[in-house]
Length: 106
Image (cartoon, rainbow, N blue to C red; front, top):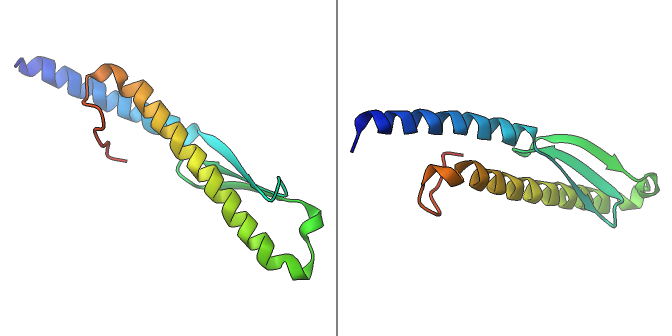
């Protein structure tokens, strides 16, 4: 095997990994719960960026329900972000000749 070719491929992979990490940082997804009464927006790695709560939910008796809806909305958004990251990983790494199912370091 040609050592220079291996080094060039390693450098290309490192560059693609940097591009991939930036792409993950740029992903934003929204999750909703309770028929859209609670919405959250998260960054690609799960950082909560926005929270919107319908004012009709602001009743003392509904606090526990509201808390559960926030958790459900965040979970939905995180699931969508993970799916998008998986898709982008496959797109960017498709031409690298890596074996299917290879685990990447993130």
